[in-house]
Length: 166
Image 1 (cartoon, rainbow, N blue to C red):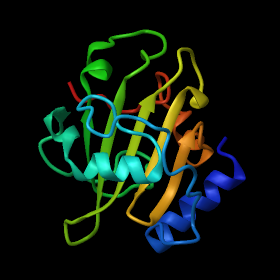
Image 2: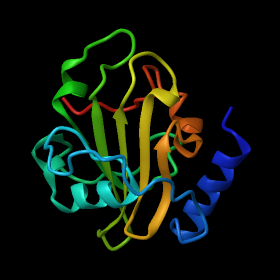
Image 3: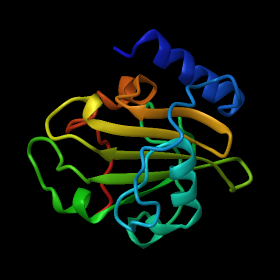
Image 4: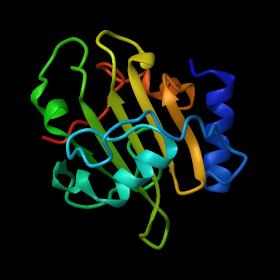
């Protein structure tokens, strides 16, 4: 069951589009390489720089936005998976370096937010992943094991990941 904080953040995101005051801004940088094409940088400023460079667009991406699946609070979205995520066929946890980016769209078809997740530690559990959701100063989640994301992603059949784009 999701934590109370995760439910509040999800409701805030849905109601206000993730506006300021809704989430946890977390660290601005972890010192990652912001130009690595396979690994999203961590931290609200560094991941924003990495996303702006569009490096994930060379990954395996869904061809177009689609309505949210299942109980997802994200709305229309498009998901991209890096090579490490695609190559891991399971079972068990994904390898360190596995990552995905979800573009979340507004009703006009513009990217409203990004959701990024990156496996940072071997093993199982939401705290083995870095989680980010936001765009610019609008940060809803940003940190390793952030329960804003793990509350729902804990329901995934395999290691907190619902969708892998082959």
